[in-house]
Amino acid sequence: MTHSFGRDLFMTPGPSVIPDRVLNAMHKPAPNIYEGDLIDTVDGILQNLRKVARTTGDPTIYISNGHGVWEAALHNVVAPGEKVLCLATGTFGNGWADTASAMGIEAEILDFGTAARFNSQKVAEVLALDTANEIKAVLATHTDTSSSVSNDIAGLRQAMDETGHTALLMVDCIASLGCEPFEMDEWGVDVMVAGCQKGLMTPPGMAFTFHNSKAAEVSARTPKTSPYWDWMPRTDPDRFYMRFAGTPPTHHLFGLDEALRMIVAEEGIENVLARHTKQAQAVWAAIDTWAQKGAIRCNVSDPEHRSTAVTTVVSDSVDLLPLQEWCKDQGGLVLGVGIGFGDYEPHQIFRIGHMGHMNPVMLLGALSTIDAGLKALQIPHGSGAIEAAGRVLSA
Ligand SMILES: *Cc1c(COP(=O)(O)O)cnc(C)c1O
Image (cartoon, rainbow, N blue to C red; front, side):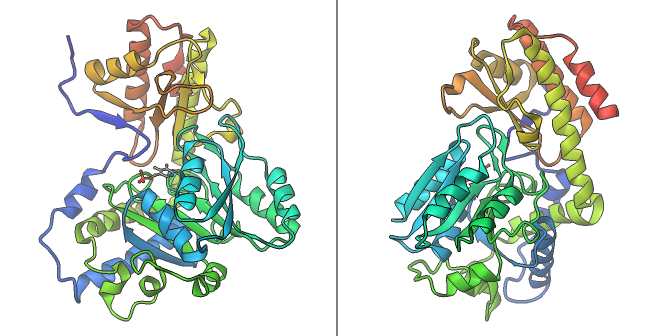
């Protein structure tokens, strides 16, 4: 018999929990899209997006999901026939490479497995051999949401700079923006892509590119075939509608405006990031305790390499689908499904999203529900996981 008649909790790594305030902000009549308040709202959003990404560069808002801005970013700075170097630490790194290939771009993949960060020295070795500067960009994923590996982007930039190579550094922060420290300007990232539905707590439907002046120069000489993906008129529009290449996503903008106010003006980005670190450490404390009996464990063993937005749990011995079903049907807790990688099939994996709008009661409720599920299904697990998580949160 299920006891789940309250509100379901979604601990998926995107779309993440939408704050009621964001939903309520969207509940408004249609605005004037030619003049007036909406234009100021968008200016405020762009300003806050810069603050979250820590850049003075130009953000562009697309009516799109993450897959769309993978394409948008590439379209602006890499021409078909040119080459990019793609660093993979999970499914999403490979996904961006597949998008590049489908666009006629030559995508060389450096696969670093799914259990640890990429090795920037290996990247530097490949770049050093490319004396003709044929590689136009290095594509890196900050946090790969399938494996929950979080990569060292500052270290990558440094290794690239030491080679003197001219390649742009392009980074996928779709899972990490607003959840993990990221310094676009300080770290020397030329192009960054993000979405609204993960750390930014807004219903899926908008995604962003950010670019610096170096990327703008490359973009100015890159031939373009898509007026929709072209970021140039969007960042320097003659008329407001050109920011969106057509009708703006009015109500998504209202939602995002509210979410960014919560992040930037109220909680403060530093506090948001510190909260995510704490939340993640609480989740790891629970999983590392369960792992003492050997049935399940964090996919990434080194805490330094773990994402503070999402944690991937794997099992070498147990089918984890019944646990996910138990949590959903009996507990009202929806976990992130496993995306297969390496030696792991999807049913040997689940993911806990701890991104965005979350507090201790949600986190401890989710961990306790998983704990109850492990007991109900007699999956071996160390005891004291919830106490361990509580200790982290109260420290
Ligand atoms: C979610 C995600 C994507 C894909 O985003 P969609 O909005 O589902 O298209 C790409 N990269 C990373 C790192 C992600 O987390």
